[in-house]
Length: 562
Image (tube, rainbow, N blue to C red):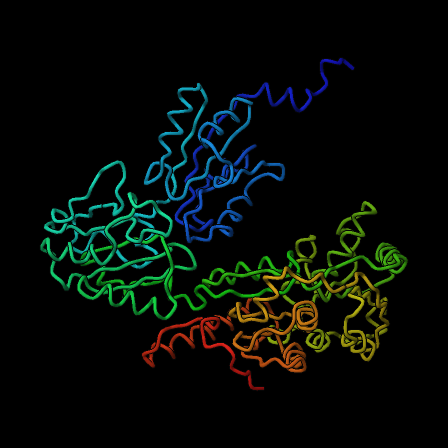
């Protein structure tokens, strides 16, 4: 082999590449608003310089969501910790042949100093790209339900309340116009230099009234817009400050960034509000499942406005001895079984991994009928290239439901009487006993073991016991037992939602009051039932003229009555 054909060492390859800098706008505060081009830049990045965190704003989850697009070996530099000139650092890394992404909140050229980095790259001869981001100017009013243009409103004026570079806003001139005003920086966050602090909302309202705006002009303040911590307060110029103080006195205050909208479009906000009125908006929901199993559940929760937090309570491990699984695989190949019954996604995964370790695939199931206990398990079977032959009724997706539709063994029409049942080491006997009663011989095989996971970090345990979570979803009896075992019982204000009667029974045995029971044993039904519960509580509060509070915001210390 020609030695010159060998790959270059990593150092030489890096030095031979042309460096590049990309400025990526990440949106106002939700990783879901990252553009496709921005995600592509992050996938190709060698170095990512994160957002500079504004005082009082929690961006950890936001940054984590953005960094999920990166490769595993990406180098992440925190903007608040790198010190010195961030632009010089980006240019230096690009000169080393690395692809650098500098993240900006919103849009790099709108309210950010992205232009300075582009100029530095041009001076250094470094290739540079700018990826526009969703700006808070238009997105935050949309999240709040305020249509800036249209409906007879032909003009919008954008103003920045904080002085920069000696520039000042002529508020009297702005007040004299009929344009809708969008004011950035209406709340100066704690720690801002005095020179960067604006006049404050109280002074702004008085100044606009003095400049000619009617005191009854509609006005809104949107805090943390576009995030699940968003709050919108609508009022009029002469009453806004009093209403903000009343909200803040009840603990609803959130610090900057805040955006203020002044003008007639604000009057439609109650009618058009769509984001903050989601049934589970801002609810912190505990999902005690393995990370792989929690993905679909968390995605469905986010669709209702919730903030899922996945805490594994079970660790799935191979069986202690492999002989049973080896015999099961040989039996599949040699025609030992008439049926294979899968009772969980983990069971499907265990059989699939064992087959693939022998170089086999779904063709090993040729001539074998396959049953699945529910929708999620059936999906895993289909992903393996197999169409299930038998499923339980939609309203009874359980082992008992599967037994209710399983045909009895008939020696005249069934060439083989044996069923393979791969399952967890702690699974119930319902299916095995039911099939035996129907005349089948069951090979009950331990396909995997479920062991209790390690306790979650201390802050999570404290949130569970102290009422920091609004709800917890239990998808099996084992998740109840294991969560209580590793973290303690959820606080009495936390809503408890369970997937079915058996899980409900276990929760009650552990002293928990169950608030929500899914109408059928499936993840979608469980999440939808919790959503309906949240929507009902929201309606009750509104009809009673009370503020809509999350469970974690309610008075602590009340006893949960069983």
